[in-house]
Image (cartoon, rainbow, N blue to C red; front, side, top):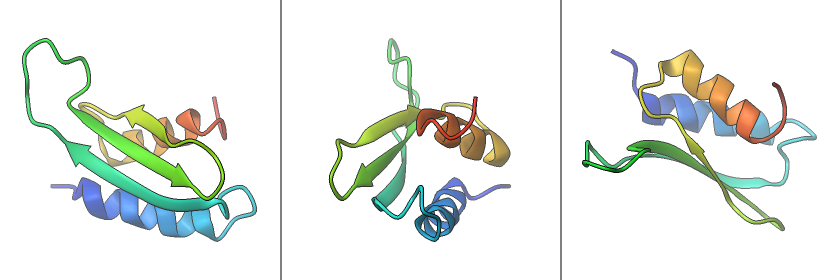
Length: 78
């Protein structure tokens, strides 16, 4: 089974090594559990040195899905 927290931590470390991601201060995975009427149970919050945080919904994502959705949320890919 994939450890989503480790995947996000490794993605953050990798992104911080790039020109695009050198503004990232923190990237955290949250799992709120299944709560009725909540559209997003799992999400990643990306925090920056000088920009507002971005929250990316990753509910039901696989490891590669998390990476893809976070990159889309950051505007890196479509």
